[in-house]
Every structure is written in C-alpha cells, then in structure tokens.
Length: 326
Ligand code: MG
Image 1 (tube, rainbow, N blue to C red):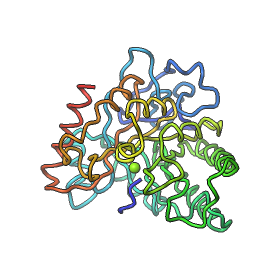
Image 2 (tube, protein in one colour; image 1 turned 120 degrees about the vertical axis):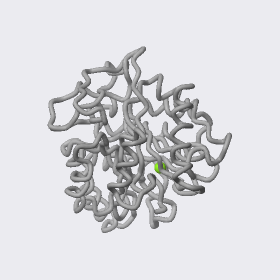
Image 3 (cartoon, rainbow, N blue to C red; image 1 turned 30 degrees about the vertical axis):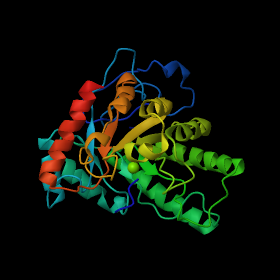
Image 4 (cartoon, rainbow, N blue to C red; image 1 turned 135 degrees about the vertical axis):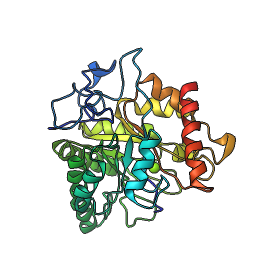
C-alpha cells in the first residue's frame, strides 16, 4: 500500500485481462486447497471473464506476465489518456484507489469499456482499521470496507487491498496471540462476504516503518490459511520486501496459492523500476512467480523521479527483460 497519496469467484477463480479466455481447474496444489485461498475450484460461468483457477498452475504450465498501473502511473492528463497509454504499452491491469469507489463504478466501467484492460485490484480507501481498540473505529472500517468490496465485485476486481493496522493508527490492540485470533475471525467474515460479492480481500505486508504488525508475505499467507475463507488472500510488494524479506524467491513461494497481487517499485527510493539502477533487480521474485504459474498482476505502485515519458517505458522494458531472464 502506498500512502502517498461471477457469480461468486473465490481465490481460485478470477478474471484476468485475457478477455473471453477461460481456464479450467488447474494447480498442482489444488488437491491440498481445502479452505485455502488461491487454489480453489475451477472457473465458473460468469458474465465476467474467468481466470486461472488458483495461484499455482500445473507443473510445466506458464502464465504470461500481466502488468498493471495505479491510477496516476501512466503519463496523461485524464483517465482516458492514461488508459490509452497503458493499452499502447501492453499494460492490461488497472488498480484504482478504493476511496469513493462505489460512486465511481459507472465512470470506471465506462472508461474500461471496449479496452483490453481489467481492474487488477483496488488499493485500500477505507476508513478506520480492523485492529482498533475502539469499537466505533472498527465499525467504521467494517462499513467502509464492505462498501468498497461490493463496488470491487461490480468492477470484477481480483480483490481489495488492506492492512490490519498502520503504525500511526492508535489505540491499537496489543500484538498478542489473542489479537491474531481476533484478526483471523474477523477476516473470515470479511472474506466470506467478499466471495459473495465476487471478489476477495488482500492482506498487504508492509515494512516495519509503516506497519509493525504484518511485515512478511509468509505471515500474511498463514493468516489467510487460518481464516479458512477462500475470500482472504495476500500479496507481496517488492518495495516492502526489500526491507523485510531475506529472499524474494522464498517470500513469494511462501505466499503460494494465497498470493493474489504484486506491487513493484524501484528498490532504493520507491520510484519507477530502473530509476535506482542495479538495485532494481526482481529476477529471483519473478522466478518464483513463473515457477508457480502466478496468474494475477504485477502492479506499479511508485513515484517517478525523472521524466515519466522516458522512465515509464524504460521501466516496462526492464521488467519484461527481467521476466524473460527469470
Ligand atoms: Mg504496496
């Protein structure tokens, strides 16, 4: 998360940008999926485009790199201009913020109509937080999050990104096993609601400067597992992973079938990938995504230090080169 600023388909069934393409049951972990998140049953009939079943493909199967931009990543004055730019550069996912999303459903549907671009995820936008000690703050989170989830479902988003608690959000429940149990129970209810709406909630681990509570992809994935809801997923953000993980490869494999979304930025200053030179190496992480046939999006969540008309296409080229190398 960047503060700057189908009928039912669960973690196993989602849509991607390959419009009109449907995928059947896949996943060499699918025999183990149980109540887990990103490894569910086969694609379902839907007015929306179905997606690969599960976050993991069959051995030897591959999925293409699917790139996504947040709302202000592409050069352009208007949303239409930015979407035109994305289409021209092969970016097929769009990640809007969640604030006022329900009021924007019509606008966004209209903007995306006829384009080869789908909503990759919704970036937060709720009020309150789930681990507040104050019941009214928790209630505000629940009300606003459910409103965004419903809108996300209408837009066919893979999920809605959330953080249990930022460091600045107080008073917060203590970091204890009881609080984790509470979080798991609340997320189960939220995840089940998200499934009813045709989408998911996506837990985002952040670095310790932003959120002490949830910092590593594996921790997020274990919370997903413990909810038993296929509507609860997690993600990895290369920026936060730079500070918290010892291995991009190990971290993303730990997310495994619960992995629903990826954020990417330069690894030194959180600008456009490539703007921090040799630091901006994503090959090990991409290798994990390729091995697990990750079927969702890699989404830009970053600023731009230089001229965006130069840095954005250079970043796309860099990422595609590293994906090919991975
Ligand atoms: Mg992020």
